Structures are given as structure tokens and as C-alpha cells.
Length: 353
Image (tube, rainbow, N blue to C red; front, top):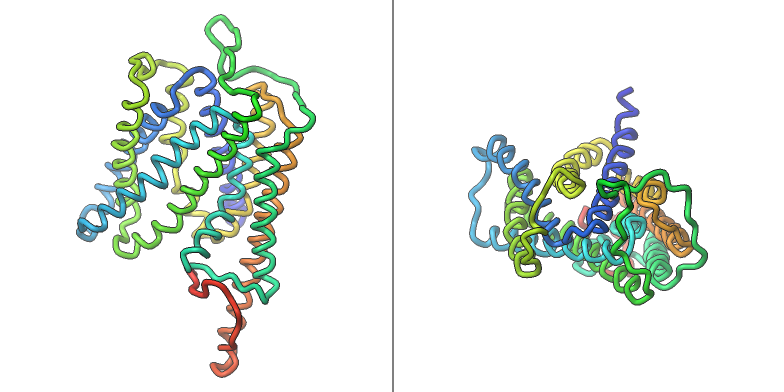
């Protein structure tokens, strides 16, 4: 049973993320402002994390310098506040299925950013390096397919729409089916994932000078709460948009702010490594496709399925290349010193691992 726990954990993680896309999309379709939603979501996460961080790490945490605080402020602004706000706008324009599909390119985007910042190697004279480059190109093709190709439409049997009014009538969706709006949403979704990938890469550098992970995460959530509030209050002044009742809006805020946490992911990475977690990402797309069709009555397009498939192929290609390269590096470390250091042509030779 112990061996099965990581596999059950990754299935649960992807189910949680599929639920996040579904309840967020349902709340936005019901008229909730996406900027207000991000503020409430971050506020809920802050209320949960700050007491835990103070209880567990306050006494052992190193002093927070002004420089580290400024770095943390910028990290929370780019990787959390702007990423979530842009993702919310993109989700209004597109669908939960597309949001789940684009998460498959996040590991590829993160790797590409690491290469640009000279934190990851790309050896083009090795099979692993070529595989990673081909995977990036396949992911780019999948993203373009999602944006510019729709193809035939499929509408599966709809059991019940998640957002019905009290009389049982389904409220109209805010999603526009216009081509320009869909393309804009796809580009915004990719921009959101780019900010998220940049956040994943840069926070590793900050953690070297401030290793208290829980307190660091709580501080980012707190700063993001103030940042997202400033953006939301500047965009939305209607008091009705700020009211939370016992409805789907409150459910979406509580679910995304409390249930969607990183602790389970951290445990899986500790047990099986980051590649194992990344390889489970396509499950999120599969769960979201079926649930959005059955519960949100959304139409699935051939372009979404084809683009999602290409993103998955590109993801696995990059992960295969990364795994093969790590195996080669281990073999080189076993060789005598005069054989291990052989000259090679590569881009950005500094490795993050």
C-alpha cells in the first residue's frame, strides 16, 4: 500500500486542479469578476497559511532583509498576482478545457526560461538535447493549434450545469465564441503560464538566501493579497461584485484558496521526484474535458483535443530528454576525472540540478 500512495496522490492532485478550473469557470460564467475572485482567493490562502507559518517557522526563520523582501514582493507580483489575474481573464474568454490543456506546457516553459537564464543546459549534439528541443517545438505547435484551429464540435451528454439559478434555469455563459476573443484568451493563457514558469525558476534563487519555505510562501500570499486588492478595487467598484453569499462564488473562493495547496505536491516530489509529478499533468486535461462537458455543458472542439494531445507529446518528449540527460550525467560522474570532462558544444552550460 505504501508504494501506491504516490500514484494515488498524483491522481488526487490532478483532480483538485481540474476542480479548480471547473469551479472558477462556473463562477466567472455566473458573472463574478475575475479580479475580485483572485483577491478573495489569495485572502483565503493567507488566512490559512500565515498562522501555520508563524507557528512552525517563526522561531527558526532567518532575518528578512530589505533586499529579500523586495525580491519576494516582485515574485508575488509576477508569479502569483499577475499570473492569476491574467489567467482569470483568459478563462473568461476561453474554457476550462483550454486552461487544463495549457498546463501541460508549463514544464516546457519553465525549462525554456531556465535555459535563457543560464540555469539549465541544452546540449544540441546529444540525443537528449535534440529531444528537449523537439519537445519545445511540438508544444509550440500545440499552442498554435489551440489558438487558431477549432474544427468540428462535440457536445457530450450534459447531466447538470453547475451554475443554475434558484429556479433551475441555466445562466448564460460569459464566454464569447468569436475567433478574435478565443485567440486573445489563448495568448493570455500562455502569458499567464510564462509568468508562472518564471516564478518557479526565480523563487529557487530567493530560497537560497531565505530557506524558510512555509514562511516564504505565506509572505508571498500576504503580499499578493494586497496587490490583487489594489488591482481589483481599481477595476471593479460595484459593491454587488464584492458580496459573497452561500453560493458557487463562495465555494470557488474557498476551494481555490484552501483546497488547492502545494503541500501534497511537495510530498510527491520528495517521494518520486519532480519528473514523476510532471508526467501526471495530462490527467488534469482528461478529467477537465469530461467534467466540463458533463457539468458545465461546454462544447469540445477538435482543435482543443488535437492541441492538447500535441502539448502532452511535447511534454513527454522534453521530460524524456531531461531524464536521459540526467542518466548521462550520472554515468559521467562515475568515470575517472580525465575521461569525465570532455569538450562539447552546448548552450547555457550551467545546470540547475
